[in-house]
Image (cartoon, rainbow, N blue to C red; front, top):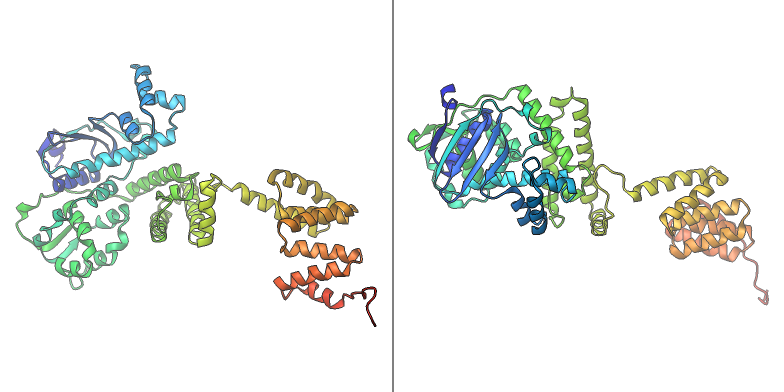
Length: 488
């Protein structure tokens, strides 16, 4: 088997052959250059220990940045002009601040995923693989190791292929279906584990294993996924027509626990770097106009993905902490976007660039937390301590009925009656149905022997909360003096 990788290998290209080749080289952790030439297009992928870390195409990387609107034509031209043998154009843009490292890595990985899928669209050509066994992940920058999943990129490309390409493969499978052991990890990698989980598990038992026809009758939408697994070499049957019609895959080395652990650590670090500190939709990598089912589906997918990594990274405190923060962020998003009103509020804030990001406490939440703390001081009659802090918070926040009410009550208890009434009346002007404002104003009215005003406030309180004990008791005990001129 080692002879296969000791020299350059070549063959005729087809989408099916490309899927099998790429899967094999990734699973075998090969290092080298995979080239696919369709005569009109050339795509080259650089593999290091089974990871596709870079691509070479006829179009420069920065040219693709221009086409995507990441940089302008002028910026691209200037970077080309300033570049030297020692400093690449990309470095010029990074140093000048036109591109951040995060944006650069994100778009570079997007282009890399697109490069992986391109040969799927070419029906003919030739491929070649030039082994480079001396290449090692240890010899490249850390940030270049965080690369997109080759299998996920392949699957995303397969989903765009013409449905007609899927016809015919089912006729090659006769008898009960069998799935390779690697199917589980591949399905998890491409986020399709739920689709075939029970069927894959049942295939281990000859009595419950299904035929291709019965499976397609039961799950007609799974045809494309089954086609993909078939050409990965993971799906076979007890009797396959004409073995020559299917390219035999190269043997796949079983992934060890240590391999899985390293892969999971790499994924967690990559996800943490690319998702934390983003708005909720960018964190989920979906459009802000996505439907609720799309949002829920992506949340469930990430929950399954990250939840499955915990056991393998328990011995890595730094990675485990990052994983927990990702899960906490997901819970934060789910709580907000699953509630229609909360989602509406978040979308409004997002339009005005005031929405909180994942992993940060929003300014609004921080202010609410501070107000609650100061309200506890007021409840404890610590008015002198609370008043200056409330005024500072008012300066930061601006007009706020809750803060004005607390300031008014502090002033009243500290003897500044006129200022206190002004503050509470101002608060009632902002929000006339706030129970606490109404209660404070009723207490002040009673202290000033103004029962009519107090009665009006008490009735408003009870109208909102019939079980308000103090308001009910006070209203029953209040006595209204007769108006002058009333007949007895």
